[in-house]
Length: 286
Image (cartoon, rainbow, N blue to C red; front, side, top):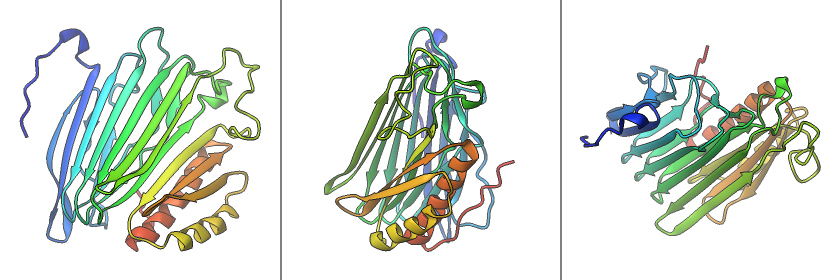
């Protein structure tokens, strides 16, 4: 993999790019191409008792600042399996100027699988984030995709204090669109604002996630398993909707960060069992 670029010195450390290619090698999947520029970086693939290539993406600068522009391109070749995660939550810092942008593109080949399972994103008060996740699938490939957020630094009383939060997920195969889902939120200007707390918003639960599962699996059985899981999640809520073809979209609402983690990991475990006939994956984050 080779690229040529002219460095714009004021943008060094602001325009991050990451390109990964994963291929099948015998019974396992391996990273065969990796190129990145700060503020994006990847760790060496994790060695777990799993045939997938498990890659952790991170920002060594500690978070995203206003004006940062990130681009992530992942290609998973025929028959390969990639799990893409982060070592911790992603922080988005206050900006008085440009927004932070992140574009993710996932290209998934025949009989390949991608599990996109980063930790949740924390938009600080005054931050502005615009994110797009675009997935191109083969009709025989599979996808588990998590897009999770907090409403801010909740313990500091900063719920909904961000300036803007814009996230869009687009998934399609050669037959057409499977999902296009987008929300655009503008935070309140004062702590007294409660616009997101009522019925139809987040119902006083400031942690939320969308989980999309696409592939060949029993969608009705998955929905039934999810309903049983919901009974074990306490104050968290989960609900599912069938996509027009091949998939399910799950929504999660949680009152705390640990509750969000429990809900997402529970849904992810059910998705792995349904789609891949595999047990939950313990990523061993310290």
